[in-house]
Image (cartoon, rainbow, N blue to C red):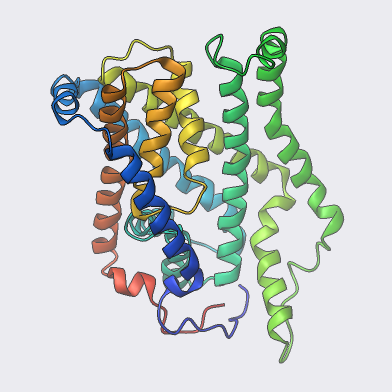
Length: 348
């Protein structure tokens, strides 16, 4: 296990991304104002009264399940740092997801590393590296989903000058999108050519500097990429995560009575995934709803008020249950939000 790095966070992980807090807050409030300005409450509530609870509950189940699938994926990336139970890692992960829903700027990604660092005594920098790797896999998966979504868009929904090109090469676009994960695999398997395999095994001797320890910890977090078996495992788990997300979105669409193809769930996941990459208010309020409304109204010609009701519905489906699970994990660990977001010790 990597040695501790003398890096103190004196107050809160919020200080690490302070500018994103205010930017995300402004963006979220502005987007929410735009979303709400033409809201017809009578039509909005009428749509909600007709929701099929069975499909909606199934959507909640698949979405929560997709988050549980992220935990064994993260464990593969963390295994080279030392022994940790899947239960503890899952609890730390969901505490992070709870904090993502309370604070902006995805601070939960830092907080889950803080929780796991305290319990398992791993290097904080190495844990952050594994989270960065995890997000890289998700980024490539989002790119794949977005490319697939383009291939499955209904006819006529692309700019007129691009429509013939996409119609003619639709199959090639879909096949190319499915092949994108191979790029990550090939890149990962090339990592050992550029990283000295002995570096991950050597521990810093004596009083080494901050920079050396940081590099050493970062390389420890990258160790899982040196084995193709691990990388393949992470790719398989990532595929399962995103397929389950698409399935959840499709169930949500069915719960509101929208007669849309399964590919609509794919398009919706791509739109949401792209939208939440910008700085956000807590729980992605505002931009999330606008992205869902625009997708349904512009692409699938769903009536605006029904689209608005659905935007709030799928937001609640994806935000509230995971937050509840995160709160239960927080209590099980016997910690608090303050302890999960404040560090009173050295982080290394």
